[in-house]
Length: 235
Length: 235
DNA sequence: GTATGCATAATTGTATACAAAAATATCGTC
DNA sequence: GACGATATTTTTGTATACAATTATGCATAC
Image 1 (cartoon, chains in turn cyan, brown, purple, orange):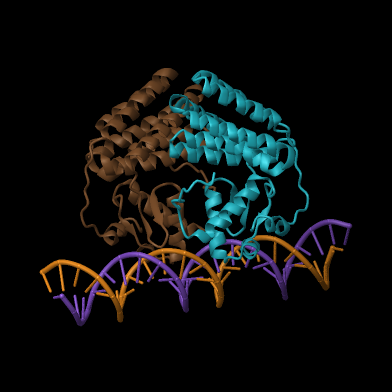
Image 2 (image 1 turned 180 degrees about the horizontal axis):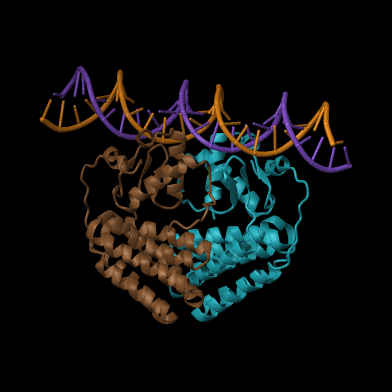
């Protein structure tokens, strides 16, 4: 986790990165909900940066499909349509199959152990910390992808997973992710056994289950104060 | 091509879009080569916009993997490493297989005809207009992806194709794309015959051929004047 | 009570200003 | 002439200013 890996830094300075990370986490953990308005001034004020930075971050999140931007209307947390949701799930499955195909040929004992530790984290978070549990469930897939060794694939999986949490926030009932954890364990087991097909099948099953859960519509459109939420993420 | 499709517009105003389109085309057509410096002032001056806009565009291109950005050092056309190139090709193949799997179940006669017309364009451009030929060869795959009906998939294929032209610019010899055109035709034929597996095989073969071509290193690092190149794209 | 128009406020789009960093040129020394 | 330190220029990072657009509130008419 805290290995001495220097971040290669993609774009501009490091100031924008903390805003990006904060906003992103707020979205992933469903503190900010689909449809929420992201006013540049408000965000800038909370994070202590100018609109210039905020704008950069919003554009980046927009490129990743996490926020919608309309000309002269500003940015909101994205509200994927059902058809978009299907596209995301299909693409995600396609990518994650490739991840497992790769992994089952090159996975090491270290990798397995790292995955195993992650699932333990998930289990713990599932009891205490709701938001973290959501995030960790997604991060299991991101970890898998990064272990695959294909950076491009990993980036795309990352995007798909992020967008999925948006979709779940929109369409799924407040799920208990216990089942998720079991399915994650099955994937690890299949990888450990070197059974490529079983791993892919487990992933298929897992993602299908997630997809199915996202069928019951429910819209929780209450009045929400973005400022108070952001305070917890501006650290 | 000029169907009445309104552009949903992703990010900010329409001013940045023309800069984006211009720069992107310059990269795809290999007028701007990997490693070329993209000074904000220079671009802004040529396109008649401020650095603010240019910066937005560069960030976007960076997110798509077409330009590299280093803090305090600015932007350059990306120079994918060989390992990155492998990642791109692998991911691209994974995505395009999915495109064909989808298409072979839903392709219409109109789709086929549209693809056929595109290949005709390619053939023509191959004789007269070098840069356009490069671009059109890639756009065949983008057209396929967009016909698949999965927007997410289409966006990723688009990105992969763009990055491939960078890779080809870097590692491949100045290829004649005649063979490409034949292979495109084979894919269409397989789709027309409703033969899903043949289509996927043809695509596999095609992409493997492209991959193989990108093995011979050759570095054409001459002094190049970005200004004169941009004049042709600032329209 | 609902709708319409206008005045006002809030928000976005873009350019510009200025500080910080990097690249480049200049000069002196050996 | 080569090398290195310093000054100058260029380029980037960020904030801010201002115009343009959109949203909001309020009064009036129906």
